[in-house]
Amino acid sequence: MFYAMIILFVIGYLCIALEHPLKVNKAAFALFLGVTMWVLYVIAGEGIFNITQNGGAFEAFKLENPTSAHPFIDFLTTHELIHHLGDIAEILFYLMGAMTVVELIDTYHGFSIITDHIKTTNKVKLLWVLSFITFFFSAILDNLTTAIVMVTLLRKLIPDKHDRWFFGGMVILAANSGGAWSPIGDVTTIMLWVAGKVSTGAVMMHALIPSLISMIIPLIVVSFVERGEIDPSQRPKEDKTDGIPTWQRNLIFFMGVAALVFVPVFKILTHLKPYMGIMLGLSVLWITTEILHKTSHDDNRRYTISGVLTRIDLPTILFFLGILLAVASLQSAGHLAMLAAGMDSLFNGNYYLVDTVIGAMSSIVDNVPLVAGVMGMYDFPIDHTLWVYLSYCAGTGGSLLIIGSAAGVAVMGMEKIDFVWYLKKITPYALLGYLAGAGIYILLDKLLLSIGLATEHLTQVAALPL
Image 1: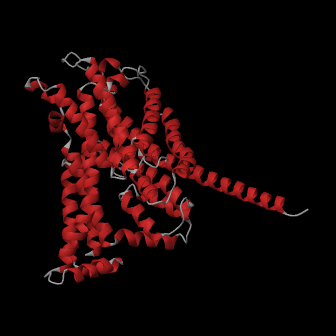
Image 2: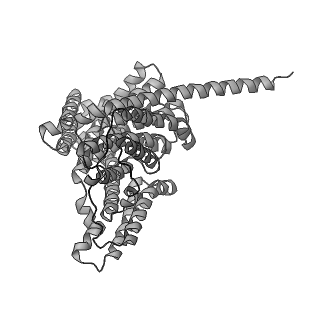
Image 3: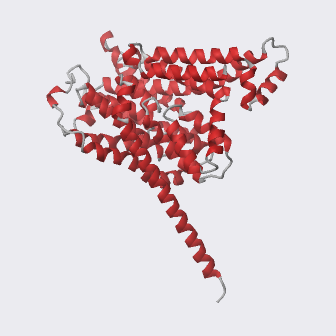
């Protein structure tokens, strides 16, 4: 049954990838996969769990619950599943909050403040502009929120669906690259930062240039491939004569952006999870919009959070739920821990190789449990090469496949991008950027190490008595 879970995961993964040929929404496959993986886990019983080296928790549970008729099943349902569901809920509630804020800004035509200033219709210039906006937004907000915001902007700037898919793919790449060099830009860098594995200065100093390279190299190559102009007359026209005053549009735009930017600040100040911060911002916007339209007709209720919530993309949220449940079952059953241990043995402690492969694997399996597994395997001090390089690899490696990162899954759900299309059109550029950034990181790391050793040697020589 241990191997049956792997087989089922691969089959489910292929069904998600072939969503368009099969003509079945990927959220349905993801939910089916997430539930059936746990069903297999329960059926398999203790035979799987005992080989995961987590038996201590189960033994403690049996001691605390001596009257349980089915201790293993009770343990899975009241300990393991609830634990993972808590982590998943944090992501889902954050996603719901961020999507609601972005949808509210869009309802008030707030993004026109940005789009009205983007005049170029040249595809290459527009791609560079949007990529750099995404890169730096991602470092401040995070890659998931940034991806949601940028897809909303793309819909207003690029009318053609396949052009928008291509730009959306490059937005995924830029968002993941931007999130990798900031301690608050990606969930994995947040994990490493909060756990005391990396410091803010080390991540920014070591990962900024490689992350920038991982975005710029694909952009340079694409500049020679992507040609043409965007017909501005085909851009969707916003009806700004719907009774929303300019001051309300500006108010909601700046309040919405402030709510998104406030999330990492809230986390630093309170140490509470990001979803709490986004819910606080959402509640303030909710109160504000209710006050603005408390005397309005029913038609204007769509300008309040109550109205916006009815337009949230629920299938994307359910897709997240299914995928994360499936990955959680692999983590709980020990598949990911065994994989991490095997890699450590295979590469004989070469941390550059370990991190590079983990980054590539994070495009297939969620990078959160992978990084968590690595954090449990090693006990190196803060800012060790393994930790800092891992922040780059786990962040940018998710761009290799569209379901390899939260940003990718969000864009895929919002724009209905085909998995195979992304594999053909975007993955080669993402791989080129990932490897280029990795090479630059290793080169700079060794250069800094050499400079440090030389400086230390000169200091020792200068201290010798004459």
